[in-house]
Amino acid sequence: MKKITTALAIMALPLAVNAQYAFDALQYSQTQLRGTSRFISMGGAFGALGGDISVLGQNPAGIGVYRSSDVNVTASLDLNSSTATGQKCTNNQFLLSNAGYVGAIKLNSDVMPNINFGISYNRINSFRRHYTGAMENIPTSVTNYIAEKMMQDGVTVNDLYSRVGFNPYYDGNARWDQIASYQTNLVNLSDASGKKFEGLGYDDVYGSNEFEVEQWGHTDEYNLAFGGNIYNKFYWGVSVGFTELLYESYKYYGEVLENTVVYDRADMASAKLVNGNVAFGIVNSSRTVGTGLNGKLGVIFKPVNELRFGLAVHTPTFYNMKDVYSGNISADYYGDKVKASYVVEERYPENVVYYDIKTPWKLIGSVAAVVGGKGIISADYEYTGNDAMRICDDSGREFADATYEIKNYMQPSHTLRLGAEYRVTPNFSLRAGYSYQTSTTSDDVKNDKVGVEVAGTDPSYSYDTSNQHITAGLGYHQGSFYCDLAYVNQQRKSNYHAFSGIVDLPTVGAEVKDSNHRILASIGFRF
Image 1 (cartoon, rainbow, N blue to C red):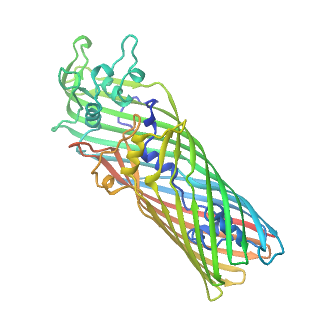
Image 2 (image 1 turned 30 degrees about the vertical axis):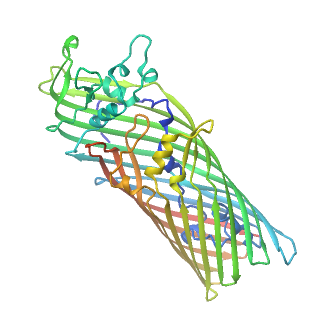
Image 3 (image 1 turned 30 degrees about the horizontal axis):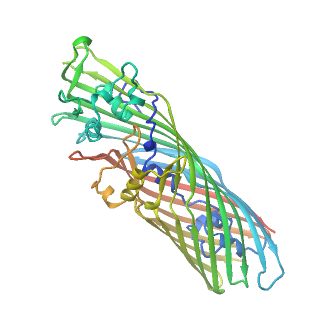
């Protein structure tokens, strides 16, 4: 998209614990409806069914249901679109999304007929997303937000400029966006005390904005599982998951403010404030890599052949993370009363931050039934304690401020998954499913009753308000060979905020709607 400002480049974010914050941690902890085609076409409701490679990452007791070995591979085509303020962006990808092997070991025992082991790869999250938007007559400016935060944080003018032996980015008490905003004249002193600041969004100022968010990356999980059954009534399983995370983002936020008070730099020796216009932009780029470890434990109980109950517990994933941040602020001052149009741009030194994240616990309860010998219906309920996430330094020391924010911004989420399968012929089956996840964010945040603390030089944040999947599919098997197809329609709604509302300042944001279509194909052999 066309940028408001004339010069935008790369910058780094603060060297601090707050390099990560609550909504980043939440994003990294989320998983999506992904797996084999059969698993997905039934809405992922396999917690009480088993017999599918995807259960290694859901309820590992499902591995005990196997009576023979299984090898499977799944490819998917993702067609994604996002819409904000009437502007639509699309991005697509094709990938190998799931693969695995289960080995069945027959024991020839009535008590324990078999013990099985398995290994699987699954892409449990894709961060790929791109949306843009623009708004007229914005109620306030991000410069007002930055100025207010400076006063809340106790920043003084001495924290904001370089002098001999003093680098404000490392030696001062101010956030880097505050330093850059002061040095680019987006925030100015409002009196002689050196402690009071004001932005450029005065009451009689007309303002408009535009924003762009582009994200890439994924979370991959590798599971090692072991399980079996007792009397073909009780199935058990344990698995260990190894995760690899890659997240990259580009975020742009810009404003045009007309009839505001800006510096006139025609005479640099006696720069003064005059009425004029400004177009500025804030760019943030980031790259995050992480590795994690988790465990899963599950059981399935089959009192009669037509009915099964399942229960699974997932430990948190313990991540070691590394962030690299970059970006800049650039401002173009112009207008009839500005004697000379000029551009001010501030670049920052690159920064790398190391830290740890502990994602939430999960509890999954499931039930499934066989109907008429040809049909299956199943349901899963999943509880995720998002407010139990924790962020620590790379030595394991918990950040108290981050814990406080997580408890105030997050709430437990509830996911319902439903699935059905009908065997039309001995070789051909039809499937359908549905999944719905409630919001992970507290009502106080959604209703703008609390100010949201963010990290680094990026004042923006976003969160999902609803997320649902409608699925369908079909399957065919002949002898040891089988193939499955699945279709997924995901409807996701999110709220994007350019910055948080604080004191009497409103927030500026927009609703983002994602409509994602996924087509999957799996092939496998049982032997």
